[in-house]
Length: 341
Image (tube, rainbow, N blue to C red):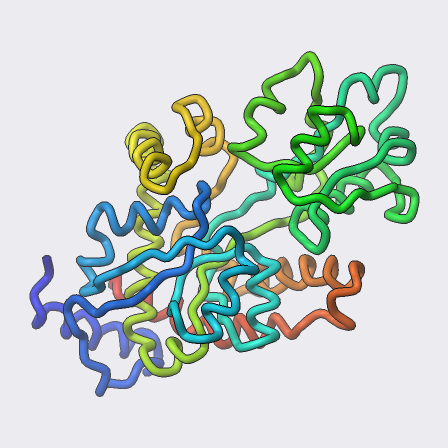
């Protein structure tokens, strides 16, 4: 582990390179306790791995990871100050920014290839994806990235939203409805859709976010209070988290073994085949990739596009100002990058 003196040297450099974002009075404290928000799925893997491999402790952080069933469930807890940082899906990130200043500090993962539109082959027989969307019920999660991909795929097939009979379902029920035939098509993601996607006699993946040219991201986030009061600690969290991302993408075989351990630790019904499948679809981002997208407006644009799904669904009158969100979080991401100089 780096000594306290070395920590202070690194921080001083970070302050200069980050343009004075962090106050020089901010002292590094070894074993700084923070609580991180996550969910028990593969998107939560990098933070678990960062803790497992000692990346957080390398940066003087004593981390506790709190798992929530979904991003929405985590928001009230975050607003109350029960956790300081973590990751979430883009819809709760947008809602959190609008409600209490939950701040994006970079893209943790891109899910363009992971969220898919699946159709039953019996519905497709003698038909086309466009006709199935127009004539058969479609299952998806309302006001979600699943809806975003569905609408983008519908556009890809020249189908208007009003031409579809959309059945609002949560993810497990969407999968059940696909398997039972209650819907002709539905949106899915890995690894829970492993059995469906690999049952090529009954199902066909006809579209995904990449095919439909819509970008879906999961951001790393920090609370407004944490960013304001402990920006140095926030930067350390961000840097260590991206180190885990980078380990996963550069060491897939080793990451696979750790992912199986993660499954057991958080209670996911997984297998080596499912783990390999989901690692092939989830694009965990490097710190440099995240910094580039935050700096050139890509992240703000992507979140804004997701926010438009909320507006279409009636959740918002207008899209929250995501440029302001990125402006608030970018200094912390830059300070995290500066820690590596």
